Length: 466
Image (cartoon, rainbow, N blue to C red):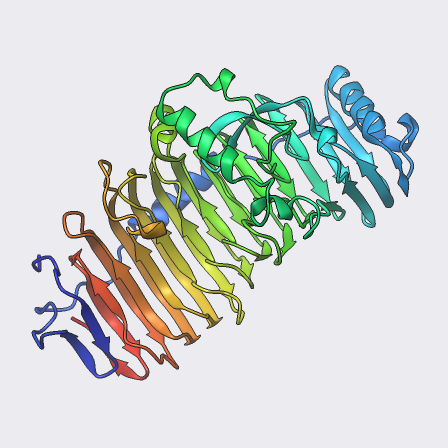
């Protein structure tokens, strides 16, 4: 194995050299990736089964909902869901129309089915998301405003159809809580992190009314057998789709249209097991898909990884990252497989992104990416960094190793690679195989990396294998 790279490394189009002129790597090129990752994909998919629902149908208009974009339909939606659940499950149908509502809480064996032309238009009033519920806010558990669509501890739940969940967040509703003149979320975020660091019980970490921690658009917490199919989600206060501590999750054919808001991640599985994300179209103000597992002390307390996930046949436009791990990595992110995705936008900063720091910790391993096509990216096509938020010291250095990226093609980006380990915590075993980067305008940066392998890698038409 090559010695750790302890100096800034620059990969030029004509070859690979260290900043001081020494040769990077050496020896024969490694063999192509074997069949083991594909076998793992097959095994994961064999365990993922979308829930099935009885052939019972409950039209929300029969419970008093009116799609006139004016009537408060919260009680009607709740009554329909409760009736469906009480009868043993089925489908709660929202026909075409604009339905104003507050928090919608799903129950076991219920599919919330939005017909084409149906729109749930969520209230701007924070009181519509009370009482507080158990949640995770940026990787830390607390009690806070309910997500707009929420479930806790339920089994066999779904949101399906061709309709829309419209969070209606904008610069004067929800997004204004992120900064600027008080009141804003800053003091509450600081308080929550202090509570977690000091071991304050979750039941005593109560926010909600009078506080400014933004809710998710959709969060399923500690649920099993989850399906999101065909819907459009739009303009969330923060993360759009956020399954937490769930098992057997399918997100299929979903459109995330939320490119303008702060922290508007598209799909963020956090501490989830057996996840399939396929045929989705995502444009966000932050990461398109981000695997997470809790933050700092609280993430280590819960200590549940995101593990066994497949992302395939998705399209990403705007976003800070196309497929991302982090930055909340304290419980670990492992066994993530990305296949046959397309990404392109002048506002897509990075295609593949892994980010953590030595306060977060966690193991990030066995990330396998194949056949991703990138048209345009605005920063590094591939970024793996351990100095996220400019934090370079801490007691919990992440363990990042076993990252394989094969058959990635990039038509245009400033930089192909931005790989930044730390002096005492190098990245390990990063393998690029059959990758091509064109129209690269800036030198690549590599610091503190052990076992970087470039096999049939081309930058601006020149092969840069080591």
